[in-house]
Image 1 (cartoon, rainbow, N blue to C red):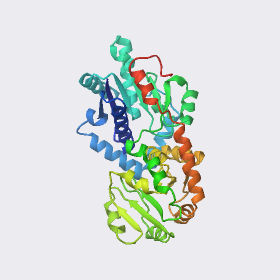
Image 2 (image 1 turned 90 degrees about the vertical axis):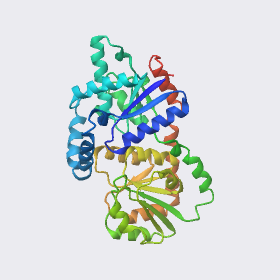
Image 3 (image 1 turned 135 degrees about the horizontal axis):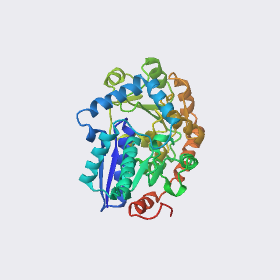
Image 4 (image 1 turned 60 degrees about the vertical axis):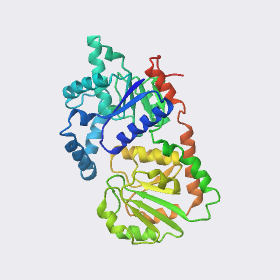
Length: 374
């Protein structure tokens, strides 16, 4: 079985989901060949770096522009025509000729749109590409129209709520698997290890994990970190990502605060944590769900983050700050063991809603069965 996963580095969530899917597929089906391609980088090898830098600049300093685009397109229809469609279609045909996959999985909407469009053209030409299964993996708590394309054979939905929303938009239930957002195997086994660690621990020191994502988007005021330092009987780990300026400013100033730069083994810190503070990104959210570590979210700034944050509150798995200066609320939550335990229990319930055999159903689609219903 030969599977091609197409993605893009518009934020690391899409790329991380692709890598996690590859890991899960190879673990479950070791004889499969699974490749991951950064599709925009393949199409525009000399310009993709500039494209990604512009995107990061827009979502960090011009998020109102991104949100305007998101809201306008949310009122649009499925099967949208992306910019530079002709160029993308030519390069996709070239890529399919290179890999000759039995199925394509898209973890970014642009990739799903282009594959769907190529299948549509193939239908007019009676081309065998028409029969190529397209699986779309949605990486936020959203059913935004950009994810929906008529030539998609299967949707990997992050939650039952998104599945219902897709059904309301005309997607047959049999084409939707509720899988959650894919996370690495290291995170999927954290809950069991945490249970062993936490037995008898509630009387001990409380662990708080603070993350700012790859860009290290964290509060800049010293008063915030001073307030964290004063939380009684707590140890705090702050991961600043690639924000080296903040790392240099904070490192070594407080005996109960450990400050780190970019780390690639986040699960080791998540395993120790009793609560995590982070932006409400889709991948980070499901990493915390698998670890059963309640989430306290920074105020969301992007529309898809607002959807994720709303879902956090609705599911009872965490809380959302209404301002950056939120150290007092963090202290109250971190010292309230009952509220933390309730949120962790809600996370276990969310995890139980995910289809444990979804990959088997997915491979049935790839093998050419009718629909994905069991």
